[in-house]
Length: 367
Image 1 (cartoon, rainbow, N blue to C red):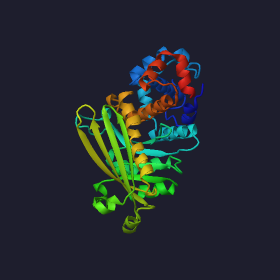
Image 2: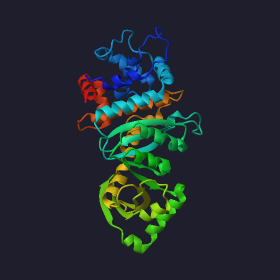
Image 3: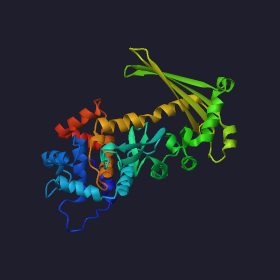
Image 4: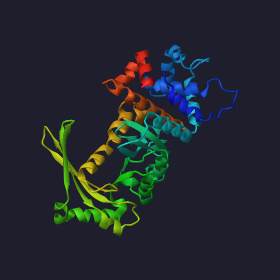
């Protein structure tokens, strides 16, 4: 059995007093990892699950004092340095694949259960990078609130080897410094445009609003169906040399794109249309721009949605100190392990099977 994840997190310092600890840090973290894998949702459930699997766990670590109680698991993750754990996590993911390719989607998610009061104040906000082609979470950074994504994204990019990749970010991250950081990493960007970049957004919107200019743009279209609806997507792309001259502070700006999505309900025939604008360092070819914009949504569907539905992350009330952030990192580690296991069953059923079948647990941890 490969314990690569635990090998990478050995660099995380245990701040407890040496000689005064009953449960070693590697045993605590393996307990949390396996408990989450086997459908645990909080520290009490993790303790109960791993007590049942103690003999199996002793194949890999001594567990001389047995399974750490939930109170100890909670206390250790509250004190553990979250940035060190996140760095170890991204190092582990980097070891799983030689190079990040294709679209790297970056987006934030608020853990609603971590709120401090009824108003929602104090809830933890996490910014994650998701590799669309690999189906893996690549890195994570915690921030105080959504507005701080702007400072967290450059830190996140430092953790990644993204040469040759396409980084996609929503409008919050459409910042000159972030674009420059991506280009400096020898990657390309596709950044959503909204009113937070007022002048740039206005110029792009005016361009596509001109019928003659829009008609001259190359177009790419896609049609798909699912969840009881048909979705038609089209992309207009244009060379942005004129825009780059007006806004020279945007490094390597080469193209602008307008993506229009029309969703039609199969039963009722009702439809809705949404139009989004983008700037990019890619050439003005609408097909790859449309594909990249579409791929960005995998972070919502394959990461954020799965964390809420499969792991019930938003219902978890862990919130003190660093516990929520560290537990979120461990969930993403488990999600990556589940994604790498090749059987064609849902993630929810994989967790159930892992809870029941020790051979399947072995398979997941060796993929």
